[in-house]
Image (cartoon, rainbow, N blue to C red):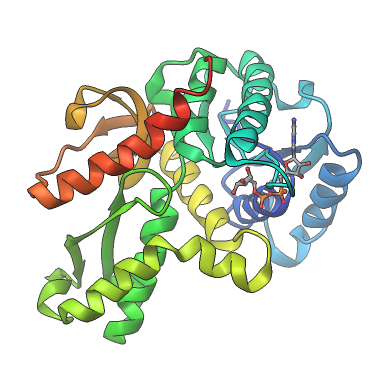
Length: 309
Ligand code: APR
């Protein structure tokens, strides 16, 4: 008997709800939205489900404050977390979100022991590590989202500068999800043509700087974090896993010696398929790129050392 895929989205805030909506529109599977706030996941799921006859999707959407209904999921997406409150340091936020992620992953992973887990909650590189510890899943089945979003921003800016469709622009970003991320101009192309042959160094430098602060740019305009492009990024990763697409996507992956790093989750190019991270791709880096990557790695290791997982 064939069955539909089942996707649990934990956290029904801006990003979780946007992701659930996209998963339904793309008919990737039945979606269960979870949140601690009573009524919100139920109401949002009902509202989205009622768009089904218009949007013509056949999948089901439900909302809950319990985990029983998430049992048997194929993918668990984690967007639960808290925004920083006045008087709260980054370290306080780190511990708060780590506790939330640990708790929600511990509960959900027990009920879906074969699932892949995709973490978005920030800081995503650190939270992917926490999610692996909480689930005790093979590290390949736990991953984080950052690079698909950072690369999408990079690609959008390149496409605008080139006045071409973003469909034809390939680019990627390595490293932690933060200001120290490493957009790799050398590995970026439009229609297969290296962007360095098409745009001046000044324009490329400006695009790299804008990519690094892309999240902040949206935040400063609408006073809350971005959620449309993050939702699209999560849906793309979920699809790659569910449909065993073997996409090459920048993914927060577990490193066990790759790039000279061990016991760490950080953004690297990876093949995403039915087993999660099928393979981390080790690409050649110049001395300058390697140094930038190492600075970015440090920005992930330092907060990790504050946690006891
Ligand atoms: N279990 C389930 N849901 C939770 C829990 C928990 N223990 N704690 C918080 N949540 C929910 C909140 O109730 C809220 O609905 O997580 C949701 C987060 O949604 P938003 O505040 O709208 O945040 P969003 O913009 O979606 O970002 C989600 O991504 O960028 C990061 O730091 C950000 O960690 C945050 C996450």
